[in-house]
Amino acid sequence: MKKLFTLIIIVIFSLSACKKEENKLSENNLPAGTHAVKVLESMNVSSYTYLRVAENGNEYWLAAPQMKVEKGETLYYSQGMEMKDFHSDALNRTFPSIYFVQSISANLQQDQTLSSVHQQANAVQKENVSIDPLGDGKTIAQVYSQRNELSGKTIRIKGKVVKYNAGIMSRNWIHIQDGTESNGSFDLLITSKDVTSPGEIIIVEGKIVLNKDFGAGYSYPVLLEDAKILTGKHI
Image 1 (spheres, helix red, strand yellow):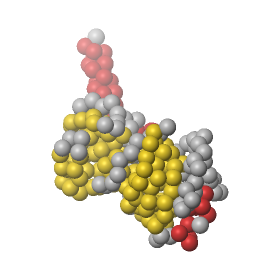
Image 2: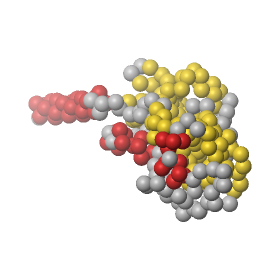
Image 3: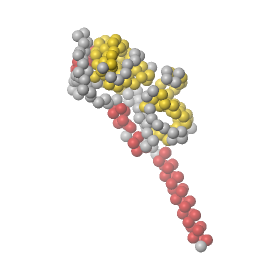
Image 4: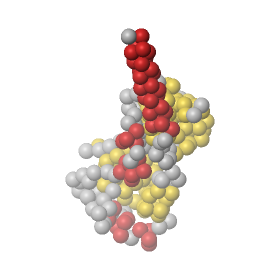
């Protein structure tokens, strides 16, 4: 009986050791480029969640689309864009260094596909809009079809704001649509320091830039950069 009890104890410890080794392998053998971080602190503001995390003994800050997260939770992400001396107006705080991530997950299997998530993150659904074009401006169809001729030039364009992300890289990111398209391109990305919101009809003026690469996989074939919002109204 004593030998049987001893054998049971050995089996239990063996199974426990195997389980620990299994967990260790899953954390250490991550897909290439994937980061595993432990949440130390989180703050939700506006549409973002700020996370103080630890990875391999190092602590740093992340900013991600707003999410529910618990202290001590392990999260996975693969791509982040570092911003130095980033000031958050919502928190009234300046971060010496912070990484903006488009997608972060508690599920490792989901995060293994993050190499393609960035391409999908900026995808915007086509909306049923019809905007009267400006007499002295361009339509989205014209921007894409004439982009080589327009590169480096300042233009005006009118459209509906369909997506808006504020305060990233010291600028606001605005997607507009006007109901026109060229070869499937119907959405124009604009960077500006001016403020707007989804649903607003705006007229903007900015410079057309081609193949803009911000690093970390964040590149855009056509961008209206440093734009000023001339007029705007909600519909």
